[in-house]
Picture 1 (tube, rainbow, N blue to C red):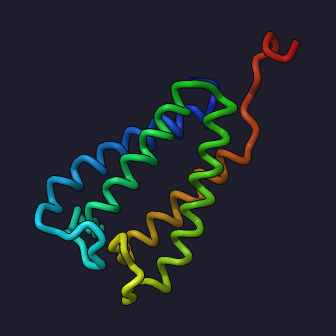
Picture 2 (picture 1 turned 30 degrees about the vertical axis):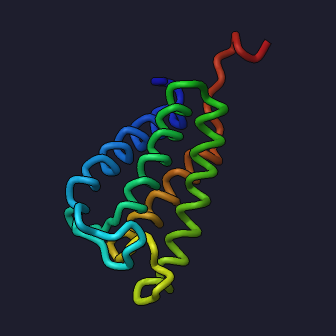
Length: 134
């Protein structure tokens, strides 16, 4: 894992998103599953659906990070692309009844920053040991 930025980023992001998903449930008791206004988790708004999404993304990233380089690259790229889309769409959904994951401005910034990092690492090449090329 030390030689693979993709595995490292996938593992770290996976663990963080799993933790955020779990902690999110502690602050969203009483919040409707699809509520357009969530509870505050630091400066981010979350609702139960948002927490489930964090858990799913965290599990996928963590699994890919511990599995192998190619899977980590694929998942980093896929999650990065989804976060780019969510970050852009989120700009238009803030005051909309379609905002079913309770996005706020801080969420959009975090999603766009995550997208840049995940896509940057996912689309870059990992060093492949000489023994693996044969």
